Image 1 (tube, rainbow, N blue to C red):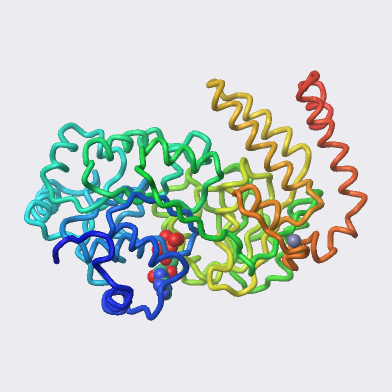
Image 2: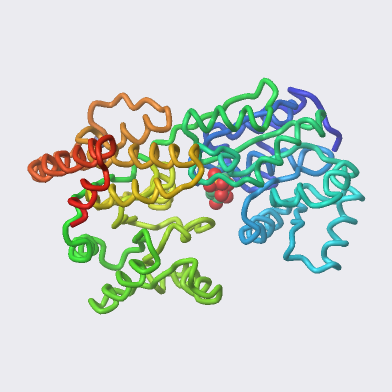
Length: 443
Ligand code: ADP
Ligand code: ZN
């Protein structure tokens, strides 16, 4: 098929291709708009929540356009799944990364040179490999898709220096549109993505981040294990993830649950690969309903029926928190997100933030910690707070899906006051003699 300008494909043709290639009857919100932008040669940044259907937005044009769409994706470990999923849809996809044998490498390069691929997945490190830009220029590239584009911003929660190499795309391939995608971007991160990628008159697509089926709940942390057990009592037999901040805590909590007869497994980056794979598979197949994990667990987990996500420690930032809770309820059925919060956790977050050597990084980490504190101690609608963090207004007076709006928080009124007093101490302590205040708070 030959490449064309804007408007070459009618809506009917695009729907036809959607049905033919993917077997779907309708586009999800914003998909057709993004596809048309790419086909029309425009740069774009699309911010859509996890599960919103981002891959289709570049896979469909990759099939319709001449040449290969180069997808930059941060995790080599997930690339195989992405390639397999694309191939299952009948697309011609491959990855180039360090896990390939020399023979496989050669085969992919040959397929590229002879124009036999729709999609090529690469990691950002690839771009810095000697000779790679030149090789890229010798292949018929149709456009670039930058997945997890927030990784290019230091303001994001997942900055990857390798992503900075992507600023070369526009310069070196002025004829190719660049389509950036992310599931999380504050207004600051959004600006950073646009400027660092150097997007030209980009089309901005921002889907709503609201997840109406998620219930948000924050409780003061008293006895985290006992609180977790009582929470799990309301979710017997259901799948869920319990996040903890350290490997040691993960193991303690998993051991505690096992002792109480709950089928739970631990997952963190310190475990051998085979063990992590086993836990992930057991979770996917419903053999192990509860996984207790660090934030290492979740990327690439596409389980639709996760019914709860519980954070027993205060997360480092709102972006990460929102992504982690976002793993619940992808099937659209109700799911519950519990956060346990204590001022000691906050003090600890600040303590770690301040260990960061780089001054800019330190101030970013502190700012993230304060935003998390705002969320946890807030007695206004949690949904409104989360959405406004991502620059989205939520106008409903009552969301009906958080502890504040449903009135549950009232019973805890006294605790909130106590917590506010404590966090005020943390706050003022940050200005005057934090070490002393933190010592007091942390006993
Ligand atoms: P994201 O990358 O935004 O998290 P994915 O691209 O993985 O989301 O898509 C999430 C799921 O939705 C996938 O199972 C995908 O096949 C499905 N999906 C995407 N677009 C559509 C559509 N138009 N109709 C039905 N299902 C879709
Ligand atoms: Zn609410």
